[in-house]
Image (cartoon, rainbow, N blue to C red):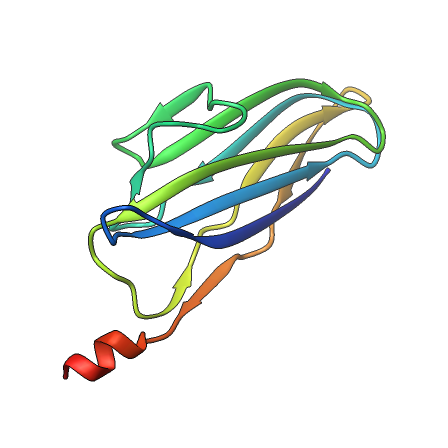
Length: 131
């Protein structure tokens, strides 16, 4: 199982800082009982509406999201995405935690970890002109 994490900026209505996180789960071989766990970074909140697959478990205390997938065929790619936002604007480099997956292949339990996704923000011209 190959996990890839991508992050992109989303324009929010209230001028909030919002990001769309997309996780691609690509199965190289037939696997089953997949549990994908992602953590939310500090200072951000989870947007309640989901465009795709809704997480099976949302643990707000430990800031965790969990998805369960019964099986993936060889070569199949499953895309999971969700939005996070913050009232506080983030400057500089914003790092997201890695995504973990635990799955079963040929009776063996295995684990896979995604790449580290970063988002770099720059000061907008409007902010600079106000100083």
